[in-house]
Image (cartoon, rainbow, N blue to C red):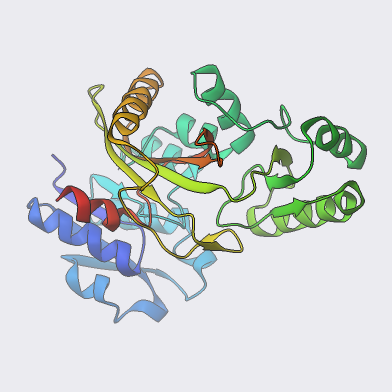
Length: 305
């Protein structure tokens, strides 16, 4: 077990990680920007280190400062929480290089699942159904139009490295596609630093179902059931509930067992969430995997105890 964990985050998730560590008898280190010096996570941790000015780019996203804080406090592990550096494979690699345990999956798996077009291909190879869509990034109006025509409208143009509903555009007909393609690429670059987009079939009145996964370092993978987050605004989740009413006990067990097998096969470790869309006929399609603790994890805690 770790002796001291640095929590590379702030706010609610930093507090939850600190409290969990205290329950396990693990010392904690908080990092904070100058603007957060009086925040609760700073006051609750055993130690705290200021890592820079208020701007996240100069503090919570400042990898050298975070690594330095871990080294001067002799932390043997870093927990990234969610957001910020939680799904940054380069940060996980730096932790490994510096001999600090990164509490999360391997950099290779973070990188794979962070590229949604590659994640689709990998999960399809492993047996999960995916929505009809482009084989990879689409590189121009003509290619986008060809894919949309072969898939059939309506389609979604999605940022390959996106999240949080950004870099996505719904296209109902061919005349809308060029402007939507340009807007999705522009927003993807502004939000994530990558212009790559791909095309996927849009499912009208789809339900959004996600499975919570936990995996240890010894090949044991456990699913903790599913949550439904179909009520959304601008692709942002508003309400999350568990269990999902359209998922029967038998289907939960069979799909959960499949996910356990697949994630064991790819040597996944730590927390993760596998997300699906369900069409009106009840068919589930893989859309993405988040390689971190999910923002909505307390819902699963409430139904699992």
